[in-house]
Amino acid sequence: MNLHIDDHQEGDVTVLKLSGEIDAYTAPQLKEKLLALVEENPTVHVDLARVSYMDSTGLGVFISALKTSKEKEHALKLINLQENVYRLFNITGLNDVIDIENTVRGELS
Amino acid sequence: MSSLKSDISNYKELLSQYLESRDEAVLYQAEQFSKQTIQQNISPDEIVNEHYQALQELIPNMDETVKDSFQFLIETMISYGLAYQEHQVLREKQIELRSEIGVAANMQETLLKTQIPDYTTIDIGVKSVPAKEMNGDYHHFIRDTQGNLGVAVADVIGKGIPAAFCMSMIKFALESFSDNQIYPEWVLDSLNRVVFRNLEEGMFVTMFYGLYDIYTHQFYYSSAGHEPCFVYRSDSDEFEKIDAKGLLLGVENDVIYEQRQTTITKGDYIVLLTDGVTECRMGDRFLKQQEVLDVIKLYADLPSSDIAENVFKHFERLQDFDLRDDITIIVIKRNE
Amino acid sequence: MEKTLSSVIIKKEWDIVGARQAGRKIAIDLGFGSVDQARITTAISELARNIYLYAKHGEITFEKVYGVRKVGIKIIASDRGPGIREISSVMKDGYSTSGGLGAGLPGVKRLMDEFDIQSDDHGTKVTVIKWARQ
Image 1 (cartoon, chains in turn brown, purple, yellow):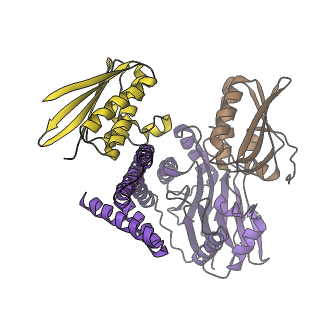
Image 2 (tube, chains in turn cyan, yellow, brown; image 1 turned 180 degrees about the horizontal axis):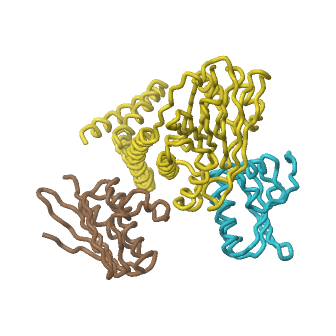
Image 3 (tube, one colour; image 1 turned 45 degrees about the vertical axis):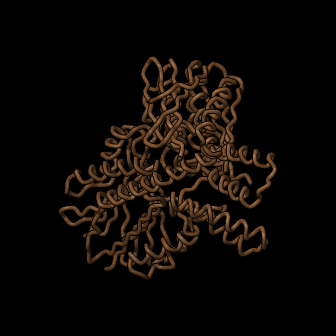
């Protein structure tokens, strides 16, 4: 399965819309795009509404992005997480260090 | 070259037989011929040339245009021949690399080997299987000077050879801790600092660490972003989730790891897992936690090592014997 | 004993065809068969294209060489381009495939019987020989 990555500007916020699965195969392209965005833009929201699956390599990407955003004093926020994706952030304790919008959506079919 | 010569005459022979008889049996021989030539590293352009030479002998008055078209065909086949030879070389290299990785995997196994301590009051079983050659899961047992059991199960994010290096570091850090009763919150706090300082960006570790007090049957545990583990309660015939708050190892320098404790009574058993089990995929869907526990329950009456073995076999079959992730299952059962 | 038969200047892509033509004519004269002719011209293409792409300007020279009871064609491709820093890495299989260079230098080596390359900051010289079977 593929991952589609799409970014656009909503006022001051740069929104990165993802759809598909984040795994060892798709993580490198996500990392490249996300790190560049976080480096250059003061506020980045990652919309995960259409991400149905993410494995631990995906976590690695978001942790790297978090580090970059902290260094640059930029804001990074994850929004619209599906339940099983949110579960991963919750288990690993990352929900305490990454800004995650707390309205969790159920699975989109 | 002599074998090639004999093939040339063989090809002409076969071709002429076929042109006379149009017989399927000859086509079958042609198929065998092509396998033979592949074995002998004969490239496609040489086969085309053989065909051309054979035709010239079989059809003496061949049209000049047809002859020239063969020159054209040979030219176009030259690059295929080169690509074929390059492919052969790369295939040999791949075999070489694979055997090197095999050696590394063996070394990893030897280096990271952990002895399962022997107790009369508790029974310990382990099954750990890598999805690929190198295992990204790690488990470790420590028996302290009072005889208590320390148990760690860890999953390194980022697989393969870098993960193996990372695990050696964790093993040696764990072994350097004192032999006195060491509590999980302290172990994870210390390990976190080691991992944070030494791991390159993009590599992280989840770990569940437990200390089983062999005299009071208290089980102390902490988690660094690891999957929840479970205790089977014999009196209620139910599983109880055991989990504690704590961040993955290596993300931040100062992390507070919560420590909890629970009493293990006779007939109870503790199940420690990595996410290869809990994220087990069945076709398009993921296995629900309850289903995982139901499977584990099926084997509750067996010794710990048989529980671990059977649970592994069950999930291996569910995944059509093609593991997507490393799987580790540890079972600790109180006997008396 | 060596004898220079001809040489072709490589400046534009079209010159590659000229080099092939010159090489094929010599190959036919020396009695090479169809497959060897195709191999020789493919090697010439690769060498000439390398000059055209990386050095912009260079020359392909053809010589007739004699061995013990054999005769062959010697092709020298020389340029004054930037040179190849690590020859061993461009001679590895799989190096050229990703760069879209076609068969690359390992391919040229396979197509011919003898292969030599010298390179420094002032240019590159590739010398190859194919012996005719007599």
